[in-house]
Image (cartoon, rainbow, N blue to C red; front, top):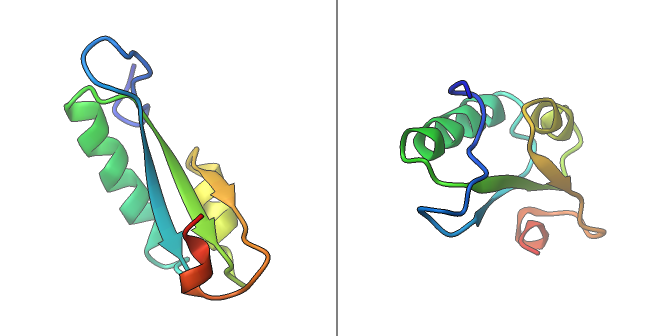
Length: 83
């Protein structure tokens, strides 16, 4: 397993979901996801990363390319991004 993969073993830690509300964050979403993946990997915490976005730019595409699940709320706005 390399540092870009998040461990998926439930032996030492509970499985968690990291939810990132995002709105037009294409300039910062990659760094944010990579930092979270690094912390999870270094601490052997099994998790999934979910990006909740009603963005109009490439935020969803970038998050998906980095392995995050993308949730798109029907309504627009940062407050609607939290499922």
